[in-house]
Length: 66
Image (tube, rainbow, N blue to C red):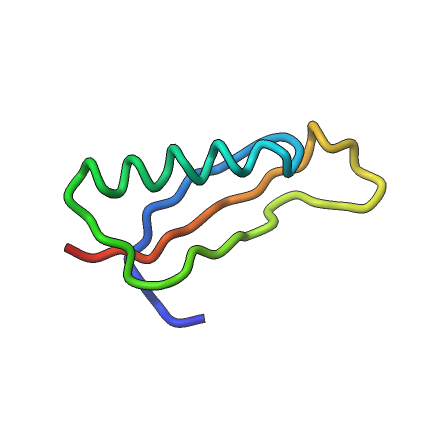
């Protein structure tokens, strides 16, 4: 994974929460004068097949520039 300046948002809970999180994150990116430079990526910080969905943690990262 290449080094990049990113805007990120950490989401705790099921993956069904990610759609709203993407909307919030991209809203922040544009309202703060940044532009996405590449596709967003997801980092599964805390995940397991047996883990209850409300305990899962995902970080969404968007590479940005001005």
